[in-house]
Amino acid sequence: MSMKIKKQAILLSLVFILIIFIFNIVQQKDTSQSCLSLTFDDGYKTDYSTVVPLLKENDFKATFFLITSYYKSGQSYLLNKSDIKEIIQEGHEIGSHTISHLYLDNMSTEEIYQEIVASKINMEEDFNISISSFAFPYSDYNRRTLNLAREHYDNIRFHDYALTNETDIDKICTKINKAQKKGKNIVILFHDISETPNYWGTSIENFEKIIDCIRKSNIIVDTLDGCNNRK
Ligand SMILES: [Zn+2]
Image 1 (cartoon, rainbow, N blue to C red):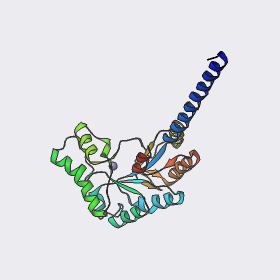
Image 2: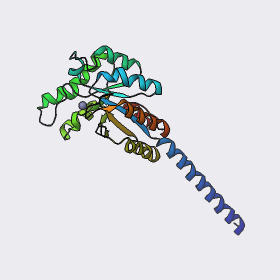
Image 3: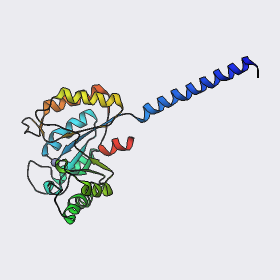
Image 4: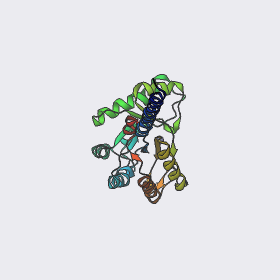
């Protein structure tokens, strides 16, 4: 092989390697798109009256973590079964947040089974759907409860960003933008959304500010199950 042909062959190989390298980068970018899940805990009535209409305006789907004894309680400040059926019809996900919202760490094996597994079976029967997401009350878990939850659910939500009425909304916006830039998923945890939020609540004004940040960031918004299945 002459020197000239040799050089050309080397050059060609280098170009080929470069093309493969660029192709990989483009592919990686596609598969590491970030996805944001809005999650709402405990089943407040405002999920139905305030949150769902705002989500609909923005074409966002979210995940609602429900407690079976709460939605069966008949309390007017909590969701009931017919509210939840409508939420499901809107395309949102519901997940289990146990039967009684107690600390699970010191419970017996039978009690833990009830809270983690029977709650799922219960909800599946009540709404005729399959439940694939679970959230621990108070983010309280140990190896035993985590293993059981993993056996029965595809998605487990830990405390990511739990908002209170004192949360600095700019910080949440920064976290959303960072997740978007790094191609990471992000989960935000809300409780009651109302005009007069308690400590764990968020005002409607602040919730709308967060929606605004999400829209500006262009991050994909989906349910917890939806985001996990995109990866
Ligand atoms: Zn809770």
